[in-house]
Length: 320
Ligand code: SF4
Ligand code: MG
Image (cartoon, rainbow, N blue to C red; front, side, top):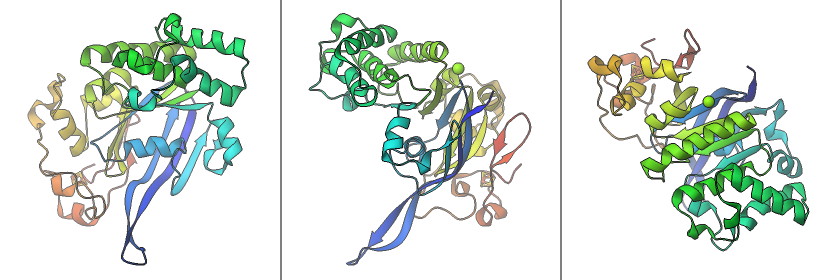
């Protein structure tokens, strides 16, 4: 396999300004030095509690928000160097599926118009082509083309997410960032949408970055998992390996809170105490130390770095 996406030291900092002259007094480091690669055709999950920077990472990779620093290489192209016009063309390859399909679909537009929009702006398609492409897209995601004249509110939540997926597919992308695509759906519907996403991945050779806080969903859909805490990756491993042998105390704690059978974890059950620290004033050393049951002196002073162990497993913790 070869990498379709390489991200190096990606940062997104938001300035904190105070006082009459709005002087910058600090920065919220929403994403603070993410390095990862995504292989062609794989699903890399990015997990963590809300506010850990996972959505910001996805958006910064697509340049829906401008990164503060770092490198993004997509299929060999330096994404950060693209001007507006190049970026517009480039967007056909990289798409996003959002968490809340209702908020991301214009309620005043019919499905026909929603799915035509990307084709008109990016592909300058003719009317006849548009109609047949919209029909095709609806069929591909398991909707009836006869419903193309309807509005988003006339569909169920699961169907609306299918429309969101069809829109993302309209321009034949290679890579899709899926930001919590099933977390707004009933559990019974989640499996259908996840199965659809897997079928589409196989059919079109898609690569996914799958952002989620739900470990059972991640276990089902992903090939590898990156665990984020306060803007950084603390552990990255193949999915099977991570669930069988989570190394970082934070990952262990996340997993012990999930009702997924996990015999290896029985003895080391950890309950997370305390809240996620204020990202304006992150703890010194290892940012997880105030909540970590294994914290040592060293953890309060020295920041651990993400280091590769065996079998593609990477962890950022002084215990290893
Ligand atoms: Fe816990 Fe120290 Fe490892 Fe951080 S570096 S996770 S505080 S043991
Ligand atoms: Mg897969």
